[in-house]
Amino acid sequence: MTTATEITSTETQNSPPLLEVVEMTKRFGTFTALDHVSMTLKPGTFHALLGENGAGKSTLVKCIMGFYTPTSGQVRLNQKDCTIASPRDAQDLGIGMVYQHFTSVPAMSVAENLALRTFDRPPQSKSGFLVFRAIREAAQGLINAFKIKTPSPETPVRDLSGGNVQRTVLARELSEDHIQLLITANPCFGLDFKAVEDIHNQILQARNRGVAVLLVSEDLDELLKLSDRILVMSGGKFVYESLIDNADFGEIGRSMTGH
Image 1 (cartoon, rainbow, N blue to C red):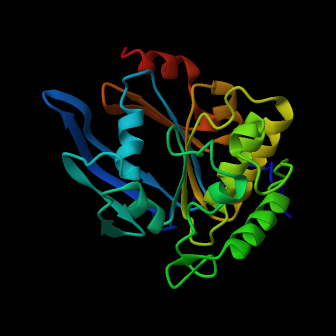
Image 2 (cartoon, helix red, strand yellow; image 1 turned 60 degrees about the vertical axis):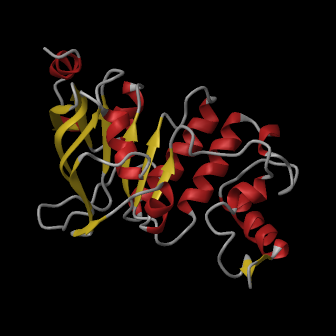
């Protein structure tokens, strides 16, 4: 039986792609942040995206998530062209996000944060009205499943520890059955060892269920521990790609600095 901490990529030559980024370009005025970038992720794989500040990695994931509209190029999910004009579009297509500003609302309760994806759907909403009992019951289930330490579902997220804030966000993003892709950036930054281990396990459990994971991180140890494949960006392009087992770390360093 596969455990949460095992690295068991389901990537095979014959499995169809989940996500395809096709010749994507993004310009801001005269500045080209992405330059005809293409990438493929298959279900149940864990890709690490590495690069220095300004390399293009943030622009790439923000285009995938609907924060930016690409200047040209295409995103394909399950071999179908799709238009992602907003983060809500990305959510509806099964893309989970633990990324920068798309995380938690500190002043809102744990239950409200956990319901940010689902509050407008039955049973949490009926005839346009929120069903607070259903929201609370769903939250309690996620609190138990993801081991969120909170005095109650009504506790404001700002009162939680950093690790429990991240558990809350992951619970929200991974709890829906239709999640196909998880994009996350530095999910364990500043957390203690136990919180890091728990969050890594939750992400790996998702990967082992067939979710494709794209991790953006500056923590090379984290990338080596979790990822199947590493991608390096520089100057708005992919400049290095390798399975983790075959990675040349000297070449990774040279690629990141543009040499």
